[in-house]
Amino acid sequence: MKKHSPISFRQLLFGLCFLLVFSGMTLFLFSWQRDEKRFANMTASLFTNEMKSNTLNMHYTLANPEDFGIYQYEPVLACYDAAATLQSQAEAENTLAALYALHPEKLSEEDAWLWRLMTRSLENTLALENFPYYNEPLSPASGAQSRLPILLAEYTFRRKRDVEDYLALLDQIDSYFASLLVYEQEKAAAGFVSPGTFLKEVRTQCDTILTKESLETGTHFLQTTFQERLQPLLEQGSITPEEHAAYTAHNDRLLKTVVLPAYASLGDGLLQLEDASVLPSGLAALPDGQAYYEQLMISETGSYRSIPEIQELLTAQFAKEYEEVRTLAQNHPEIIQNLSLDLSSNFPCKNAAQMLLDLQSRITETFPPLPGAAADLAVKEVSSSLEAYCAPAFYLTAPLDDTTVNSIYINRRKTPDGLELYTTLAHEGYPGHLYQTVYHNRQALSSGERPARQLLWYGGYQEGWALYVEFLSYQYAAQLLLEDNQGTAALLAQLECHNRSLQLCLYSLIDTMIHYEGAGYAQITKMLESFGITDTDTVASLYDYIVQTPCNYPKYYLGYLEILSLQEKAKELWGKEYTDYRFHCFYLDCGPSDFLSLRERLES
Image (cartoon, rainbow, N blue to C red; front, top):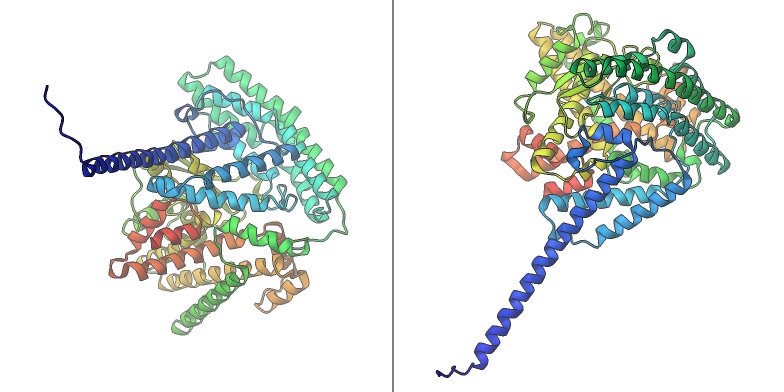
């Protein structure tokens, strides 16, 4: 038998080193895969649980829940409950702790990006949980009482199950409104009662949004839109004529016996809380109101700047816009002589369809094309019963997995034709909310982005972008008017752009004055007088709106300024390689995010 050669110390040491390296690599790979797997499981669980707990949210997020592993669920209209709120807070704390336990450097690039966004989002959420009664779900400006009917009217019926889910949600509206009333009662008991005039406004809405008369005549939009959405299922054979009749009767019965009484009960309950001595005031008047406002600003805008820094930024932008107006007027004195020129009836595009086509043709050089097929768009008018309580226009976000059909609502009472409609459609449609949403959703699906990304909301990213492109659309409108040989009108379109920017900048400053500095009605009135705004109804309406919707104007305008700041940074970093097209691609490809994370990604 051949004897083995003796193993030298050097060979033994090399072998041990190899084993250690191999073992280390194995542990490293295992650790890497472990973090990836834990993150994947965590985000999947979060997404599934959230979707199952809020059917309305799920329906607007997913067209086909089963494609995302959601097969069994009970239709649920998420209601307020103090105990459930505490449980939700505990779950958020546990989720954040689990995220902290992961190593983002061991995740894929996209997962590490999502980890960063989720971590900051949860930190903000938990910080706001320290102020349980500072929120106002029944705001006269945009409360649940006016938002819910619109979401119900646009609830798409893709299959028979959708109809049954919808009817089940209608049957829960009494419990939903009752839970909001409980919140208002708890809020009042804690010393945070809403101003009497605001509660009265909400009561008026409860009395007019849904009426017995409209239901008896079958003319209410929740009846007519139900029929419109049901008819295609009948034509496709998805439901029988008997089912069609039964669903219609069920919808009418629920509207009359559940929804109408729910609105009445909510109004009656709010009447008990009305106190004429409680006057409208900003968050600064509340205990720790400044701290809440600071955190709310981060949550609503995605900007991590301090309030004083934000005020400096707004003041500087106001001065810049004012100088633009002065220069434009000096260089073109004919503007002053034609301020009353009609930019509605003489606008080259006469309807929404023409305007949207024109906008889509003008953005091709500086904006990336939408992935996939063209996105259909229906422009609808807000029901007359909701005109007084709705925004001038809004886009209803398309589901992640179905971006073929989109809807924009126009409030005709607040949005005239011509230039204003054109820029509104840019804000809501192309290249605004619709374009941005469809772009991100299609990219998210094709790239395999984790659906949990859909749980994160960034108002400043979305509304800042919509305002950014709205201001660009004034330039498009000016070009369109020049092409139509309306030179003076083109100049007026540019002037209107700067005026709108000045107005939104001023309103954002007022927002900080009311909610951070504690400015009252008299102080704001005096300030507006210095800018020539003296109509008492206008001043009162603006003051009340800003009190009701803290951080709303900054969500738009500060978001816009943060985009300009990112753009300047991109020009600095990319130098001669900068183009607007490249910057727009960067912004859109990142998807909805906070601005601190966006800047970090830009600089990485």
